[in-house]
Length: 247
Image (tube, rainbow, N blue to C red):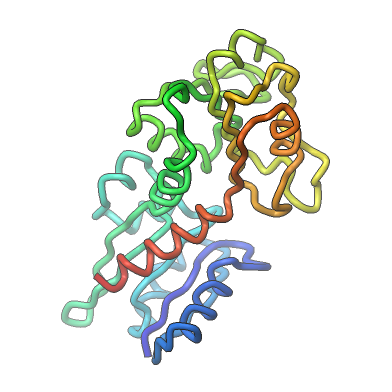
């Protein structure tokens, strides 16, 4: 039996477990299972892997995407530059587990974003500067799209929501929400920007996917903007993980 799984805390619900369990059935993949490993301390991670030699791949979610780097030194280019890992490939050599870390969030975001990009999408606003924004900034840099970070509290590298002006919105036609604003069970929350200056030249991308159309996306769509939620990004990052574990 080959086991794969997700570490994080808490893990009350998981897209990954549902996705992979259905995948194994639909694609007739035998002798594989995907489990949840809710660990309340990242220091437990090495013992978890060493105690079960059937584990060949791990996904990583909040709050361990950065702290797991203490145990995973071999990184692919994206994970190294982003400074966060959400996929770990595990190989066994002489009874010892060998780790390599990847960031498939970046792959998922890039591949789901590119079909929607137009020539005028050369500047972006990124709402939020937490862990989720790391992969977004990496991808935009890779694609040559400059960006401004927008946050609730002042920092040296961001502007405040109340500082988003008509001119800034006119120039920055790609809008990316990396915050949990709008996520169920708080669907009425959204990044507070002057939506009256959003137009049909804008593309609004929300990493939130529950509900399907957040208030952020609804406000942008009402002004003619193209919209995209984060569900495809999730599917793509999961499939990229499967590719890595089996290549």
